[in-house]
Length: 294
Image 1 (tube, rainbow, N blue to C red):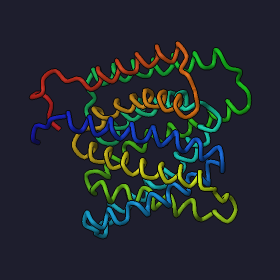
Image 2: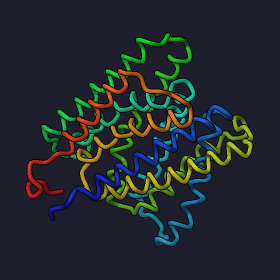
Image 3: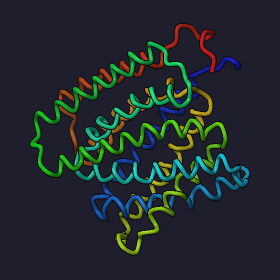
């Protein structure tokens, strides 16, 4: 297998995480207004509408059965992952919600070993453990200064379920990326979610106002951009190199949480972020460029 430069895949993954973190901020506002279900459905419908012409320009083709199966699998996983995550955002601050979700990349590293057969380097293990320790510091600081009321417990439960689904989602992305292009992946990601959520729309959908529509529209565009960037990256590098980039999401979440909701990070949050960034750098590090082939 040819040697590969990791710089572009790492940057693409970082850009994808930034887009998705900004999307979270827009979706928190929309979810608070009309509920997580309605906001998630609107995002999926708009996202599919954006991606259909993009996919057509990229070379519309009928996916082979194996790819279609993965598109459907990821759509189902992503549907419930998004619902639980957006619900958690209505109960917890953005930065803390994303911090807790960082357990997903840690789990994904080992799922990649079990399900994809990827060899995990010691630096990737230690970097992920350090990033996870940073997450624990953040969560501990949050719980230490906040009462655990019913809303907080519901939010913690929802983000735990979302994180487990997110970990498996990484594995499906890796499999998808070797069978389909980013445009196709991004379209079916939104389309399958829209179909699943739309099935119960008569029971749960809340009509949005102009502000909610604009927020979900921006969220849909950011989801498409982030998904395509991450799909492009995962097609060119192993999961163990890219997964640690997810930890940078906390930095973006802290920024967007402050800008949109005035959610200032606590001292424990700052310390945990430092550990997370250090973990990212360690996990992405290689001994020499020529020693690693993907």
